[in-house]
Length: 159
Image 1 (cartoon, rainbow, N blue to C red):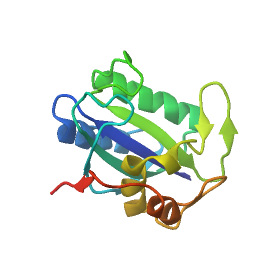
Image 2: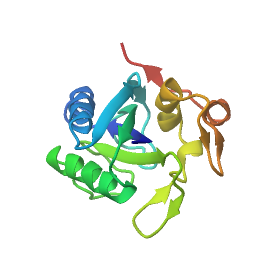
Image 3: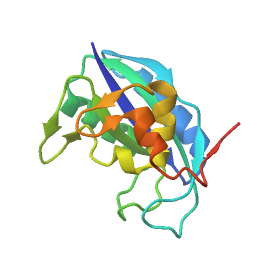
Image 4: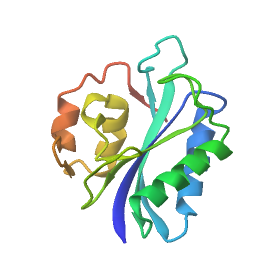
């Protein structure tokens, strides 16, 4: 089993429900155990600013799936949730990003690990910090240090 971290986001439909359903789907992947769930955060949009705020979270998985198979499973969960890739950084029913797989560094046409923009995004770092504040992301730094360096204003914890 390999430890992996996945970021979840949604700002269309019922975002909280979308994330909870996606967490259940992740827990049901073959050879995979959902080890931990972050809290849910309401965060401002990124990139395209004229859209509703997002609900974001992260999960920690232990999985037997190789990174590309895990990525394919994430994309299938997004499609089942009605995800349409119409606009980069635009609104979405569900976004699942494979952030990090322990012991794996990868940079190919389909997947870069660890995700290259983790350190820029409070909406990723806040929930990831819930799960693994001391996680060292190769080439980027420790999650707690990365979080301390980004602007988290506008991000709130959901009850």
